[in-house]
Length: 75
Image (cartoon, rainbow, N blue to C red; front, side):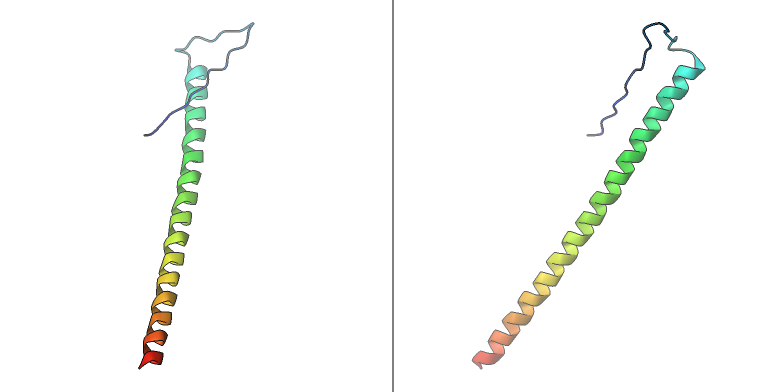
C-alpha cells in the first residue's frame, strides 16, 4: 500500500525537458523528502505500538494482581 506522490513544478515562462539532469535531480530530491517523512511516520507508529503494548502488559499485570488479592481474601 505504498504510495509515491511526485509533484511537477513548471514555471509559465520556462519549461524544462524531462530528460535534463536538473529535472531528474529535482524529482529525486522530492522523492527522498517523501521517503524521509515516511520514515518519521514509521518511527512514530512503532513508538506508539510499543507504548500501547507496554500499557496492555501493565494493565494485565495489575488485573492479575487484583485477582490474586481477591482469591486470597476469599480463602
